[in-house]
View 1 (tube, rainbow, N blue to C red):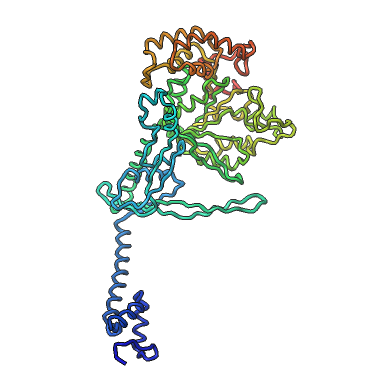
View 2 (cartoon, rainbow, N blue to C red; view 1 turned 60 degrees about the vertical axis):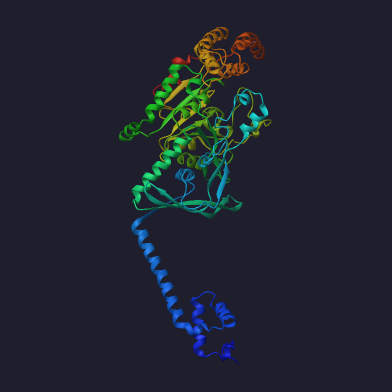
Length: 562
């Protein structure tokens, strides 16, 4: 048998078996290569055992040495930070990544559509068709309403880099950003019903900079935050509270993003409006917090807006959020899963500067006066003579409490020992006398503003806001003509008879022709009077409610008002 032919394992020398075992252990695929070399190349690799052993040793030694040097280099020359998705900084860096081109190729993208859109969609690289100036004169003039509607309904599509490692060159230094996707298992326990687990994915950002240390990270984080803030400052983001199924915790989710409303469009006495804005401006001043802390006063501010429906209480809150570039958090206490613990958790998760809005607080049973309403009967009240839809058709004796939140839990969440600071709480109500005194006492309500029906100066301002040329509309009348029309319209509409919503609703029916609004005001007044059954509107809770211009109350006399 020729020497180059393969022999059986039984005939191999003991040393040859040992050599092959060693090489197979450290060289992946050695057995296959040896078989191929023996059969096709007529080459016995065991003859080169010493050379192969040396090559294996050099390879593993170099690999181990490189790992040690890499760890030493990372320890001495790099700084790494991690950001989780539940932190607000996560959005800052995603926005930063979307607006900086990486040095290496991006293999894929994560595509998301915005909530009207979701605030997280702001990190994308595309713009909303509705946000851009894409409407031409023909479409915006209703010549093709179908195209207009289709364009408005088009959602923003955002693209962010797929999970992976990306290299950037920023401020003269290389930056490595890793987007790591992990599976997260959440377990929710239910009282007496066991527990359920859900598995979701979560992306973590790991940012590594070469040189610069932590100070470079701070500068980079600050610039990413400022770029993101400047981008979203043209919107007012509205959040709503969500509670998990067992009611043990809650959190905020963005539900809507709207263009800020100009304060000039809010129908309210100018003195009242100025007082309200100046008070918030003073509160948000950086030195104000130091002043509060030095005197041991909790850094919080509360407002109560009350008056008839449709007078603009909610509009003022939304306009103030846009005016001060603050997020608006709308609190819903009527959720059946809401408890005192979840409410406290929700308040503690609020950012340091924001507006918390509690609308129609008089309709929440826990906010009503304890002396008049037993706890067992504390349920949502009728509003304007119409029962709340949730209990429609039920007898009062069979109604259950609207939620599991108590008045004590609400008060502790607002300004308890563990309550957060820096937020602005605004409560609106149509019936202030139905509120519990503990909720409106000094310290919880610092400023009270009473709304009345629209007076002549406010009617003039509302007319001007509808027909002004602020949007550059080609059908709008000139400013001088609008002033004349506004006075004519205000002379025809009785003062303190209609809410701003009623007047605005009528003007919107004639939004393209102010003369038509003036000509039809008489008929509108007759129709409105007939709908009311010939009864004049009486301000809520009092037949002789004071004028709004003289009813701005500070915390000092809020108790007397109650």
